[in-house]
Every structure is written in C-alpha cells, then in structure tokens.
Amino acid sequence: MITGKNYIGVDTSAKNSRTYSTFNPKLNKPTEWIFHEASKEEVNAAVEKAAVAFETYRTFSDRKKAEFLKAIASEIESLGDELISVYVQESGLPEGRAKGERGRTMGQLRAFATLLEEGSWVEATIDTAQPDREPLPKVDLRKMLLPIGPIVVFGASNFPLAFSTAGGDTASALAAGCPVIVKSHPMHAGTGELVASAIAIAAKKTGMPDGVFSNLNSSDLEVGQLLTVHPKVKGIGFTGSTNGGMALYRLASQRKEPIPVFAEMGSINPVIVLPSALEQKGSEWATQYAGSIMLGAGQFCTNPGLILGIKGQALDSFVATLGSEIEKLDPTCMLHPNIYEGYEKGKKELSSQPKTVEVASHNGNVAPNFAQQKVLTVSAEDFLANPVLHREVFGPFSIVVQCKDKEELITVTQELEGQLTGTILGKETEIKTYTEVVNALVNRVGRIIFNGVPTGVEVCPSMMHGGPFPSTTDSRFTSVGTSAIRRWVRPVSFQSWPSELLPEALRNNNPLGIMRLVNGEHTKQKI
Ligand code: NAP
View 1 (tube, rainbow, N blue to C red):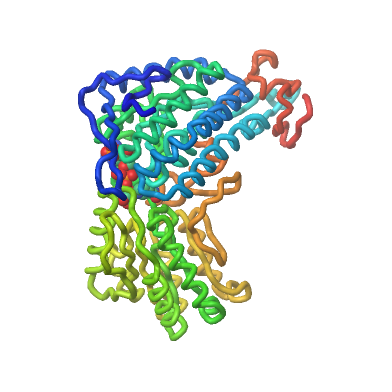
View 2 (cartoon, rainbow, N blue to C red; view 1 turned 135 degrees about the vertical axis):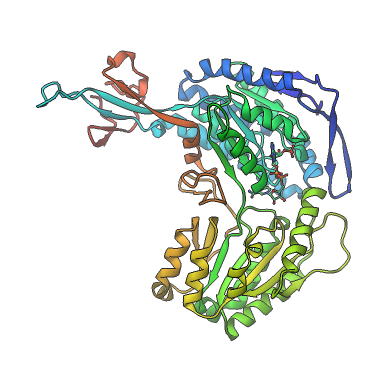
C-alpha cells in the first residue's frame, strides 16, 4: 500500500506538510497518491543512520550481503500486480514493459548476489615479503577493494524500476558494502515507495543494520542538494539530464571533501551507415531503425538520434524508406507532461535550425503527452558548423547527416561529443577500408555495435554502459552490469599485517577460495 511517507531506514516518516502527487500521463491527470516531501531533518536522519549502518554493513561477509540482495529481489516479486499497476499509471508505459523491467531489476540484484558469492571481485592482490632481498628487504603488501561509504542514488525518470530505487546503482552500491539513500524520482514516487518497502522488509529479514537503505521523497531540487553536500555522503549515482547531472557534479566537487559523482546524462548514439549496408539491405536497415527510434517513445539513453552516411542515391533511398516507415508507426505516450514538453521544445528548436530539411514527421491528432516522431536531414558541413544540432532530443527524433565523402565522414566522427554507443552498419570486407572511421568512433563511445541497433542494453559482466563526457562524468566506469560495483569501492593496501588479522580475502589460507593475484600469478592456491 502506498502511504506517501519517506523511509528513514526501516522507519516511515512524514514530518513535512509539503506534499505532491505523481501524474498519469495517459489519463492526463494526477494520480490518487499524495507524497510528503522529505524535510531537512529527515534528510539528516537518513544520512546519519546510513553512516552508522556503514560501520557494521562494511564488515559483513559477501555471502551475507548476497542474501540481502536476493531477499530484495524476492520481496519485489512479492509486491505482485500492485507494483505493475502503479508503475503503469505513473509512467504511461505498457504493462509488458513494466513486467520486463521488473524481471531485469530482480535479475540485476541476483547477478550482484552471484558476484558476491563467487567473491573474486575484490581483486585481492598479494606480494609476499622478501626479507633477504638486496640491497633492501621487500615488505609484505596485500591489496583489495573496500567500500567508500554512504551513497546517494538519483533514480532515472525513464526506468522506474531498473535504474531507480532498487536499480543498478542501488544494487551495485549495496553489493560493494555501501548503504544507499535514494532521492526518489518525483515522476514515479509510488513505484519507488513500493520498492522501498520491499527493501525494508528484506533488510529486516536478513539482519541488515537499520539505515542500510533509505528512500526520500522530493519534487524539487532541495533534498538532492542537501544530500549531495552532506559531509557523511561519500558518492553519488545519477541518471538524467545534462543540466541535472552537471549541477550535482559541480556541487559535489565544491564540497570541503569533494566526492565522486557518476552521472549518466544521455547521448545521441551515432550510427554510421557504410555504402555496402545501403546497397545490400538499405531498406531493411531503414525499417529497423524506424522501430528503434520509436522504441519506448524514444525515451532510451541509447536511442539512435544521429545517422551518418555518404551522399548518393543509396543514402537518398535509405532516407526515403526511413521516413515512410517511421510515419507508419503510431505515436506512444511519454512519461510525463514535463518530458513531453521538453521533447516538443527540443524538436522545435532543432527543426528551426537553418539548412535542416524535414524527412518525416507525424502531424495527425494524438492524445495528450503522446510523442509525434520527427526525422530531419542536414549536410555534414552544416552539422559541423552548428552545435545546436548535436544536442539530444529525448524522444522519437533523429537526424540523418549527409557527408560528401569518406574524408568528411571521418571528420564528423572525430568531432562528435562523447557518446554511450556508436554503431557501424556495413559488410565485414568494407570495414577494413574504413578503419579511420572505426577508430574515430571507438574514441568517442563506450560501446561500439556492428550491424545492429543501440537500443537494448544487456545486463552482463562485459557490458559497458558509459562513455566519454558529456555522456557521463567518468568514462572509466559502467552503470550497467556487474562491473558497476567498481564505482563504490577504493583499493586499500595492507602492509606487513599478520595473516590472521587481515580481511579474509587476503589471508594466507585463502578461506574464501577466491582467485587472487599472488606474486604476479592468478591463483586460488593458499600461500
Ligand atoms: P533531471 O531533470 O535531470 O532529474 C533527474 C533527477 O535529478 C530528479 O530526481 C531531479 O529532482 C534531480 N535533479 C535534477 N537537477 C538537480 C539539481 N540541480 N539539484 C538537485 N537535484 C536535481 O531528469 P528527468 O526529470 O529524469 O528527465 C528530464 C530530462 O532528462 C529528459 O527529458 C531527458 O532529456 C533527460 N534524461 C536523460 C536520461 C539518460 O538517458 N541519461 C534519462 C532520463 C532523462 P527533481 O525532479 O525532484 O527536481
């Protein structure tokens, strides 16, 4: 049941009289639920509890933390149809998507549990002492990854489950040994509260310290800012707009003790269509890309917002098919009127840029908050000269950039801002003659796709969901997949410690049976 209260650890709290509601974009009216904004006092209480909880939680074995993560997944499942119904009402997304995202969320939690149960993720590295080394003896040094402290998570509007309350940021931070305080996304506060209640039950059932998780309601900037500057908060995970991510990044770096902000801020995900792709199956790719641009009303961080090709008849016919195919598709509902307005504003702004030509647009009557798709085309020269055209328009919108030759394609690719993904469509034999384009693209992206679409982000250890700025604030880390845990840990070296006083991962007898790097050799052997 939704109460509208904050979770301060396992306690619910509603001290602030300021309230807000979520919104049903399909019905175009507020939902029935009222949420209490977290007060300053409640923000402080959540952080203080998290800081105390950290002292215990960080000492828990990986197996105990894994139990907690698995229990969260089970409790989310136990929320049953209520969770799906609230998700659908608050997001305008279909039931199938809600169920798929719930499965993904539970899958992520269980994947981190498996990582913990295996145990080698701590990267135990041991260099044993050489007391007889000349001219100086070598000391015993043993290094492993340890958690950094309480983390604040800003959930994403476009993934109410998988990138929100118990999403990848929360799951990875809890797996690392860090308590989490979620700044609930105001567009799906009810979904967030239900998931928070599941986490609170799981925490109680598995004997977690109170404060290992809190969920704070907020519909304006103050709560997020108070959390970001709180001295006991040690890291931030964020998914959202560039303005939001950068505001928090600046705030965190101006603190007396600056802290890391891992912000994923979006991307236009360039797709390079080589001549062989156009000749071989140009119309097939055009149809597939019309679907990819429209997927989830274009509200994916990997939505293909930019398509690059070399001018000619083949590109003309690709553009024509893309236009006719995308016009056939029905607009769908966006997450919230604010997202819809942002889409309309961005679409208008880019469409009014000089030298852009409309390829296709949906102009019929649609229900409120339904996104009408649009595709533009522009020459590479005009694209390069106008930074406005490089902006992300969050929704079913894309631009086809026409280059006069391969040299210009290389230049455009080299000039691209950092992106989450880049895609190359073409024949394997042709790629070899486009190595400069491929190299330029690899340099600008976190994930490079060959003959596919960028939408669809697999959750697995080899996934890289991150990229050079401005797609994220730190291109060295992913926010999807089990390596996301690395954002919340720091390496610590233990020098000359007796084996029995070391963390288990570093002891001579390797009681956890994990893979370690011992004197330069990967092994599970005892020392
Ligand atoms: P947002 O405006 O960046 O907000 C995300 C979260 O951060 C919200 O909880 C918001 O709080 C908080 N926040 C934003 N700016 C803040 C600041 N200066 N100080 C403290 N907290 C701040 O994003 P959104 O509302 O989810 O979506 C808006 C736009 O973001 C979309 O239209 C799209 O362009 C982009 N977006 C990108 C991605 C992506 O793929 N990376 C995903 C989703 C959205 P309040 O809302 O309570 O103020």
